[in-house]
Image (spheres, helix red, strand yellow):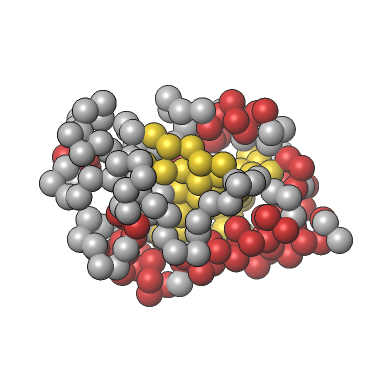
Length: 210
């Protein structure tokens, strides 16, 4: 049986995972994922994620930024699915580039963690994310970022496969179209994660640390 939310969100056993909130993906001026960027801007998703990050830091909950990178020559990265092929003609997202950087207001601090990948479409496979979380004593991950279509879905499934509980604040994730996102929550996420709100997560964390 899944524990209640206050138990799941015990700060000492929880981590906040921020998925691909990078300039090369969500910058409204870019053209890589324009529909997704417009949806995030319209819904204020980044503002909700910033609220979670602030509360996590105040509550001593580890914040882990999950980033994707591609070399300018694409070496080391497979183009083995339509999604990766469709992004191949856009500006590179090499580590240190403007496209690889986090969106304004979500810059990592020295206390945060950054786990990068240069292959695949989800954050656990072939990265140091799982051993990092285990070394931190984490048993619950709070997932935020983009997109529900692929990245967040992959994160949630892989986290469950690795034995973690998943908490999903509805306002802190986005995908397109929004009608599809609602269906994913109704028919998939409700079986894999504890669905809640950003406010509930923040209140629970702050109550645990006062």
